[in-house]
Amino acid sequence: MNSMEKILIVEDEPDLANLLHYKLSERGFNTWLASNGEEAIGSIKRQIPDLILLDIMMSPIDGWEVCSTIRKSSDETVRRLPIIMLTALPAAGDKIKGLRLGADDYLLKPVNMDELLLKIQNMLRKKRIEDELMERLKKGNDIPALFYHEVKNQLHVIGAYSYLIAKENITRDKREQFSEILNNTASTVSEYLEGMSIFSKIENGERKIRMERFSLNSLINKIVASYKKDAAVRGLQVETNLDNTSDIVNLNSIAMKMVLSNLIGNAIKYNKKGGAVSISTSRGDGGLVITIEDSGLGISPDDIPYIFDRFYRSRSVEGHIAGSGIGLYIVKTLVNAMDGEIEAISSLGKGSKFITTFNSTFI
Ligand SMILES: Nc1ncnc2c1ncn2[C@@H]1O[C@H](COP(=O)(O)OP(=O)(O)OP(=O)(O)O)[C@@H](O)[C@H]1O
Ligand SMILES: [Mg+2]
Image (cartoon, rainbow, N blue to C red; front, top):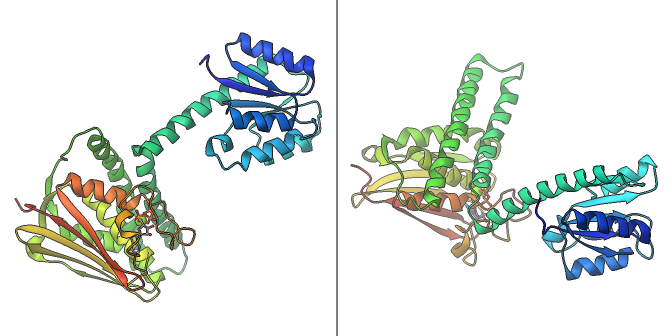
């Protein structure tokens, strides 16, 4: 147990408050007291504990209100504070009310110390894991979160096709086609797990990733096929213009799949009904140029410098179109690790163009 963990006890009965204070200090917790809701809120503002034991019946501000104030706080650390409610009220409705207001657990008075300690330890363990995840997320090296995002995208595809394939009036041809897509998507999920290992190598300082020879054109065709349904639903035309002389490349196929899926996915997602997406490859100056162009919403010049940043989303899409702002960060990191460059050219309301270039790709 971490002896420095801080517990705020909010309890208006002095005997119980002192007993809890004594017992928890004895167990190595750093504890302090507040004797009503008002004091509790003031105290949290001065020092944020790791956990709160919260009595319900208090005045002027009761435990319900403290709980809902905490959960509505503008400070994320405060919002995530574990709360254990303490009460003499045995009514079942209270438990539901407490949990609805955001309490994490509930304990009846008279307090059973062993049970309370167990609950505290469990909750603090959960909080430590969460804190660590948040820390990694903020530092920008949370690999599991990045790939969780990728895998989730693919699971959407699997979900959609498994629904379609189960429809009664589906033709045999379609069923075969859908089952192939399902199959491909399932392998994509497993490739992403491999992608996770590539990414962790990059983030651990390995600057170059393993390259291999593969057909870029068939990779692009596969990705386009997997997005066919999404594009059709939105009435989008997707066209490819693939140069045969730049087909066999020396890159990392898993990384390229992630790069292209993200770029094509964005071109479809940020498009307008009836719009177009075009994917072309060409051989320029000994290198490879891949261009993904859409006739969609476009990106404002104010946003352009930031779109490859982790978690950045333009104000015009945030809240309207789902996304987490990680996609282009993954794209850029992987492209750079393969010695490539990526740039975006866009005109608001008209469309965007993402140009990826690799030098000496055809060895
Ligand atoms: N083709 C595009 N057309 C218009 N805006 C785009 C396009 N691609 C990216 N953007 C803008 O750049 C932002 C960052 O894109 P990115 O792919 O990183 O995240 P996202 O699509 O919001 O979420 P996700 O992590 O699910 O991909 C988007 O939120 C959007 O504002
Ligand atoms: Mg995206």
